[in-house]
Length: 387
Ligand code: HEC
Ligand code: HEC
Ligand code: HEC
Ligand code: HEC
Ligand code: HEC
Ligand code: HEC
Ligand code: HEC
Ligand code: HEC
Ligand code: HEC
Ligand code: HEC
Ligand code: HEC
Ligand code: HEC
Ligand code: HEC
Image 1 (tube, rainbow, N blue to C red):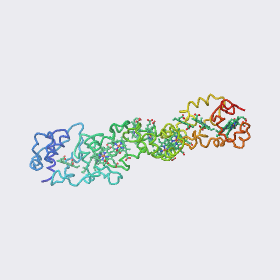
Image 2: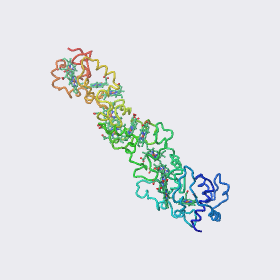
Image 3: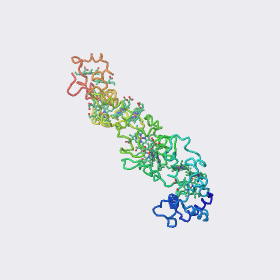
């Protein structure tokens, strides 16, 4: 039997079924599979694939005309009744070629050169997303938004404590290409660039910043953030301390091995002192100098502020001249032992000649002196009156 009449015939039958394209599709499926759909149109219930006369009979009916629904989209070769450009004339609904090869007869093969291919597209299951004939959605899509994706994928946003707005809103296609891409995960752009599409103020801040965190500068946003949802705040992949330890294992190891540990560091509260992306201060610090330390050591701040005499480096906010920030082998997180730390700036030989030092040459200096501030110019502790 010639294909064209067959095709026109079907188009005619199509029109008799109704304007709704979904109904038409169902009906056609019913007919050719021989499996009645849930609510088959009464005039065709008994039709089976073997009913070839019915096809011939239908050929008398008028050619298909796109219904005047506002949401009707026809595939051009279908609307133009060029059924044989896709279908095998001998078997009617049989295909001329397997998909996706068939589609490349007219469309540019977008899979051939792509690095990453979406499995259903690669397997030629184009029809799982597109109706090859007609649809009530643009691009011949069977469904729109996330519904299209959720046919096969579990909802990427569910009960997470923080949810990414575009993913929650089902704007999957702002980040993913449905067919293929040069980026892993079918992303439309590389990680960092993708994020900056929407987080453009973030990009400006980053560009202007003095100190930048290398993975952020490199656009490796996904090394710390989940793209869809997370059980941590701000879509973070892991809680604070564990997040940083992913790459700064050395920091964690040093702290674990040290005799004296700074409590917030030990607790993994890295973010209390460091910014994750960029900063105006060196080493990504949240604040500079003593301001950082006084965030928590406010009592000491008051003590130093009130004191009549301040030890030069402590008064100047150079806390790290004597202390380490993370861990130490010395008590009080000192850089060196209690005496040596003073000799960083005061010559040992000079100290030997100080009158008050005679008789106690090896004593820790802080037995008599307050390292931060004091009531007299020699910073003597209250119970060590000047002799
Ligand atoms: C662009 C290619 C293309 C054109 C043109 C085309 N078809 Fe199809 N048709 C297909 C594909 C692909 C399928 C398989 C769909 C699936 O797997 O769900 C199909 C399936 C069918 C089926 C089986 C039922 C179904 O919907 O799954 C019928 C019947 C059919 N086509 C009739 C026609 C008629 C009649 C025309 C011309 C008016 C036509 N087709 C034009 C590609 C095409
Ligand atoms: C015989 C040629 C031909 C074949 C084969 C063909 N198409 Fe098309 N397709 C067209 C034409 C022509 C258009 C309209 C192009 C335009 O509007 O720019 C089109 C448009 C489309 C569109 C976009 C519709 C829109 O609204 O912009 C999709 C999606 C599509 N085709 C999918 C497919 C798939 C999937 C296959 C394989 C099953 C296929 N096509 C096979 C000719 C074909
Ligand atoms: C997972 C679902 C899915 C599969 C599978 C799929 N597509 Fe698409 N396709 C889409 C979506 C979604 C769009 C609309 C893209 C947009 O609006 O940015 C689209 C758009 C198109 C378009 C028109 C715009 C363009 O990108 O050129 C064509 C043509 C097309 N698809 C052909 C195909 C062919 C051929 C196959 C099989 C090899 C296929 N599609 C498989 C979802 C899919
Ligand atoms: C017809 C079923 C089907 C539909 C519909 C579908 N997918 Fe897929 N998708 C798959 C399969 C199968 C895989 C490969 C197995 C896997 O990774 O789970 C996959 C993989 C993916 C991957 C991982 C790719 C990679 O290389 O890492 C992404 C991202 C993806 N899909 C996004 C989407 C989006 C977005 C949509 C909606 C536009 C969608 N999918 C619709 C079946 C589907
Ligand atoms: C803000 C951008 C963005 C949005 C919106 C988005 N995704 Fe993703 N998605 C990603 C990124 C980034 C990855 C990780 C890619 C990689 O590294 O392999 C990913 C990975 C995936 C994967 C691969 C498996 C996995 O979970 O890691 C699937 C499937 C997926 N997305 C589906 C979806 C679906 C479905 C939607 C819509 C509901 C969606 N995505 C919305 C950015 C996004
Ligand atoms: C399509 C636009 C879009 C893209 C692309 C995008 N985002 Fe977002 N993102 C948003 C919106 C909208 C919000 C919610 C409003 C806000 O906080 O600015 C948001 C919020 C966030 C938040 C804060 C979440 C919270 O719980 O407060 C993080 C973190 C984030 N995005 C990271 C990323 C990363 C990483 C990428 C790249 C993988 C990315 N975004 C890509 C639009 C986008
Ligand atoms: C080293 C880990 C890390 C990397 C890499 C990273 N972030 Fe973040 N990001 C964080 C942390 C930690 C927070 C939470 C800060 C807080 O608690 O306020 C955050 C917060 C955010 C927020 C929410 C800001 C707010 O104030 O609500 C956005 C948006 C964001 N990041 C986007 C990005 C983008 C885009 C990239 C890639 C250019 C990126 N991040 C790379 C760790 C990272
Ligand atoms: C994806 C890997 C990665 C993660 C996760 C990560 N970092 Fe980094 N970080 C780096 C790299 C790479 C450098 C630069 C090389 C270096 O100095 O080791 C760096 C450097 C630093 C620096 C020194 C900056 C400078 O200017 O010298 C600090 C401070 C820092 N990171 C803190 C953190 C904190 C806090 C976290 C957790 C919020 C974190 N990092 C998470 C990779 C990471
Ligand atoms: C109490 C504040 C504080 C906390 C908490 C803290 N840091 Fe630091 N960190 C600092 C200071 C101050 C420096 C700069 C030290 C210097 O300049 O000598 C620094 C330096 C660094 C550096 C750069 C080291 C180098 O040699 O350049 C890294 C990496 C780092 N911290 C990671 C972390 C990580 C990971 C955590 C959480 C486990 C953490 N920090 C917690 C204050 C802190
Ligand atoms: C996020 C809060 C926080 C910040 C910021 C902070 N510390 Fe601490 N620090 C603590 C806590 C908590 C302890 C333990 C309890 C205590 O001794 O007060 C501690 C203890 C100390 C100790 C005594 C350690 C010991 O074992 O005797 C020193 C010294 C110290 N911090 C110095 C600093 C310096 C220097 C800075 C600035 C670089 C700083 N701290 C910033 C919270 C903080
Ligand atoms: C000249 C060296 C020196 C400087 C500069 C210095 N400290 Fe200390 N700090 C010490 C010594 C020595 C101790 C006593 C350590 C011990 O317990 O053995 C100490 C103890 C501390 C302690 C724990 C005991 C207490 O007094 O609360 C804190 C907290 C502390 N310093 C914070 C700071 C801060 C904040 C700054 C910057 C404003 C700073 N230090 C500057 C030498 C210094
Ligand atoms: C980072 C350098 C530095 C370190 C380390 C240091 N000092 Fe000082 N110290 C100074 C400076 C500068 C002065 C200001 C007086 C001057 O002109 O010598 C000073 C003054 C003093 C004074 C007051 C007497 C005077 O001449 O004004 C005493 C007492 C003192 N230091 C004791 C110590 C003790 C004890 C230690 C060890 C815990 C120590 N210093 C560590 C730099 C330092
Ligand atoms: C037994 C108590 C005691 C010990 C221990 C002690 N000092 Fe002193 N120091 C004093 C007294 C008392 C004075 C002031 C009297 C004087 O000028 O002789 C003084 C004065 C100073 C001065 C000011 C000297 C000047 O020229 O004005 C400095 C600096 C100083 N000490 C540093 C140190 C350092 C560093 C150590 C540890 C190596 C130390 N002291 C150990 C009691 C002590």
